[in-house]
Image (tube, rainbow, N blue to C red; front, side):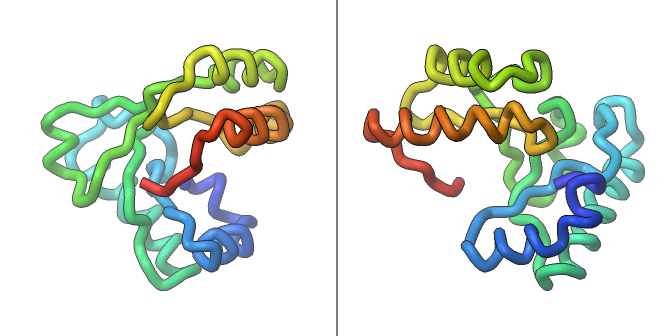
Length: 144
């Protein structure tokens, strides 16, 4: 989660924890990490960790670097698994639930991680189509 997704959504984060969902760190300000110093990267991680810890008394278990971009230098700084998607729903581009649905369904296969953003209504609406179809096709939703 990034700063904008944490503040004001504390109850959602608590609920996610109660449902045993994995909560990841997505950097404080969503900057391109390859352009930051080591200390700036550490600060990006620590700020989110502290916000999450103050809500659920534990740090996020995973990291998804901003823009999915990292290198060996950044990898050495991270202190937990780095998770990257292999199916981009393009929800950030389309803002259309039917296009998002089509993109996911044309790209999905076993073991995939789908990139979606919780800030778009079209993404939430697309899940009303995607989840039933994937379940119908005997896919399972799992934590990492």
